[in-house]
Image (cartoon, rainbow, N blue to C red):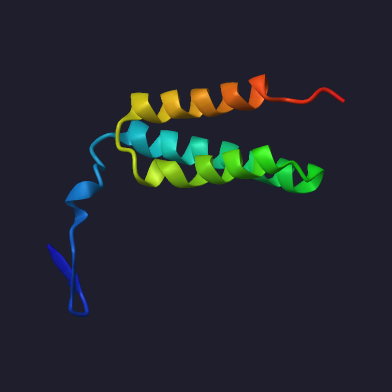
Length: 85
């Protein structure tokens, strides 16, 4: 366990043995950023929240299957609640 100042840093929660987890986190974060910017441009509150959620949640979920399940549920929720203009 490393220390930063007087605060111990525990690196064991980050699993770098699974490159697909890192790759998935990056891809989901990029999708979240694009959805967030789309919501900002169109003034769509649902897209803003979904994009923000997709950017943040991969930091807290370590399972790749669960990451993609949450992403799929979020995207399905956006699709189902869309408003056709």
